[in-house]
Length: 261
Length: 265
Image (cartoon, rainbow over all chains, first blue to last red; front, side, top):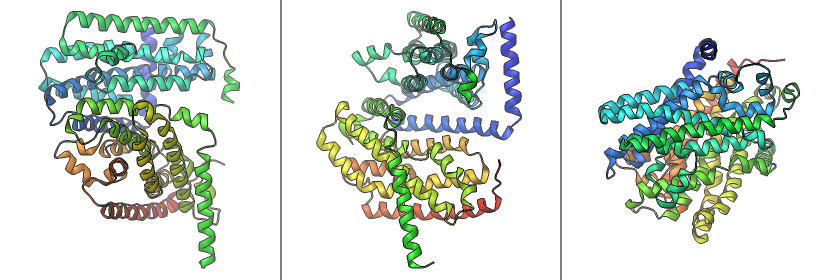
């Protein structure tokens, strides 16, 4: 309960900070919305419009986009500090967070709120509204439900990639690369591209739990697929926490002051 | 201004561009790390194309790998925030110098753009065979691209210069870079050839400037001719673009000079 109160206070504090510079806030959010709309339209026009099975693929792509943008955007806006976990470890910023009785991951999470992520959430919600008109209601409901599953998986991914600097010197650059790779594998309709070996390899990446499996569950509505997607996301999240704790035990921090200097 | 002054100035700016070009090769491990995702994007986008657009028969899979590699190369070195910040960062100091900031920034941006593109080209030459393209296809495309690079460097330099001038004028333009880049990414056919878009999108996209600086050059490199236009027509269209960008840059530079407020000290 106390943790929730802390998160709520942090959000209020971040929102006040964003509000104090309205030009920046509007530019950041609108910039992201414009960016997302262009990307969405571009991929749709290039891949699905006027193509055989275009209608079904459009619904698939809208659902995928809604799920990914809301899940990614929510993590980045509400607990955006986890995106900088690797940087904190490298710079020594993590150390002051270890000196309190609170969970360090919570403190890392609430340390930042990324403004443009609001644009992602807004875009995803618009997609959901569009889906209400284009897709069956149960599919839209599943899309909302599996956004949570994808969000948990993305949170796990941020923690897992952010923990790389515990084990690899200057590992943050590698972490960002892996994050970008996974985002691309989740965002593009990879579930419809790869078959056989390619699909098997895709299931070995975190994109399986952030995008492919939840999307499969949204599309076919089978309980078994839904179960695999949810359990997969939770196991991945648990695994990420495990790796973080393992890294924390062998963490040798650099001096925060000297790193900053 | 005498002829000797013009010559001296030209020599200076050429050397400045050359210095910036060579600078792109000064830290190869960092440059490799920065471009490490390019092969991944080429691979994934080629597969996306193969799944959804290959049935149209405009390209073979090998050609699309080269096409996407070249568009990625052109896009990833297009308008980059560090280049823009670096060019605009020198503005206050340049007011005390005898040379024009606008031209110095432009020559630096062109040099960095061409250097970055040559570096990425070297990287792609190594990657293309791994992705399944044969050497004859690669060598033809590379030679064609080398012919176009200086001209494309000028266009890219003018676009980046516009953002540098805008940053001097308004201090904060970072948020505009993202949507601006994405507009060129999507409308320029970086993800896949515009030739494979359905109508009416294809017709409209071919009219717009992004297709002239991404799609048409990449198509030329792969096929040896421009899509639906002659070489002369492409040259004319890009010349007009250069003219418009030059006028805009000069106009905004004059505004920036009168309104700029320098902080610090």
